[in-house]
Length: 324
Image 1 (spheres, rainbow, N blue to C red):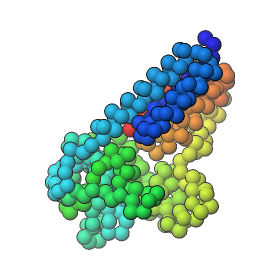
Image 2 (image 1 turned 90 degrees about the vertical axis):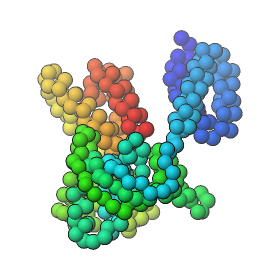
Image 3 (image 1 turned 180 degrees about the vertical axis):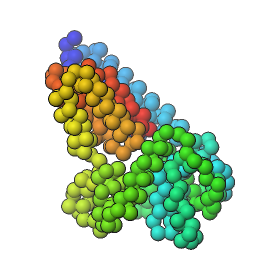
Image 4 (image 1 turned 45 degrees about the vertical axis):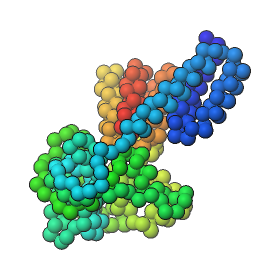
């Protein structure tokens, strides 16, 4: 088919335009101008139809998803058994975390620690534990200064609608789901580095190993931001690719049967990175695109190998699901 090489790039651009138009409706006029240019330049009706279908599909998906982004609760006091959905962060006398209600709605919870003994007890709370919580729901604050960070909008994009001011935490039970075992491992790494390293080094080590910048000192973080190199404290495509480069080296120096096993180990490591959501979408996307390029050029630079292309698509889909 003529202009077939343009099919996927233009469909992807149209999908992006659909999401943009759903959030900012005037963008729809720019898309129709874009569609008209494609029709004039290519004179290809099928290509134009695919672009329009891609735009309409993602416009509808975004609109439906956003319309369901509502809360079933109202402001007030609530008491029930909730699941600790993230690693609890303790900063002075304040503990913050995300909790999941019995009907799977997520709240941003915060608790004021009353004593040093209680602080020691709270250190043993693990992600996935079910605890009896009592507290008050409050609406997150909007930005008071135009064009600055809006905490309410930030939580809304994560399907979180309430701040939960907890006054009591009692009767916590052990986690059951496997994903919380992975989070517990991350918590152990953070606790281990906090106990082993000086405070000014522990935060940087945690940022580079598990992607957690909570314990990086404010002065250090501000300095990195002013220098424009704050991305060095995040798990980026470089870290992700270096991790899998070990598998590449072993892959190229091993026999065929060993290569097959090494490829699957690389697949599992990449999938765990995505499920845990510590690798950014762009980081693991770069890895997958490199694999696609290697497959296309029939090179063995990709640790997943030429025969594992379906698994690359699986990882890409997994990234999309983990970002919802």
